[in-house]
Image (cartoon, rainbow, N blue to C red):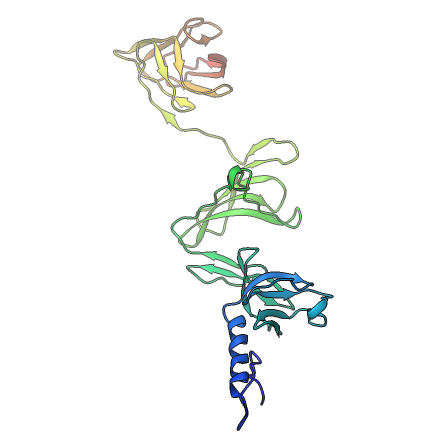
Length: 314
């Protein structure tokens, strides 16, 4: 055997004369092939004034001193070019690209391109090809001044309409909620209490933008106390109580937003009068809630609350 099996380094023969020549040749090749730093990739013309240690990946149809060396590595040292055939799995640093690269399938490519899987703090598998075990994850935009545009987007792409592109939220490795495009092109919100039976709580139709609820849409209830004619509505359903005693007037409702709806119901033993035309109330007349069954429904337009319906059921 005249050379090594992996790096093809020349071996000193028994009783060889000028052993230093072979030894130095092997050292020069080692210097080029260990911790490879490539000045250029797919280069076809040798540089006119290379520096000692400069190594290049030769491209197709190379010329000059590199003719017939397509795909090899060329390292300049001792006044000449030395060549090596890269093997599958060799690693190098791409100086121009500023990244590690790997030789696979006959080409140099970024190390992390085309990987079958990657695990950070854990192991990937055939299904979860990217697996991360961490307390937090951050995606941040590249600013304009650093070559980006300031935007950041996360894209989930599915093959066609019948497939799914969703986010699943789990508790103890059992699914509890799923949002996204689940089996169609409508955006849905699904929930489950056992990880197997998921119920659609809400869906947004992709074609129309229409919002559908799978059951009655409810809202949290609050029990604010009227203060100087002001009623603070922190939820979409309020059951007010008088500031003192059993009667009170309301002329202004605070809270909500343009287009929000508000349901107000009465309580037994209290009489609350909502004054039409005072404050920000636009009603069909003064409305009195003096029974548990009485209800007033309003919608906010601008800063005003406008009556939608009133039920005097008491």
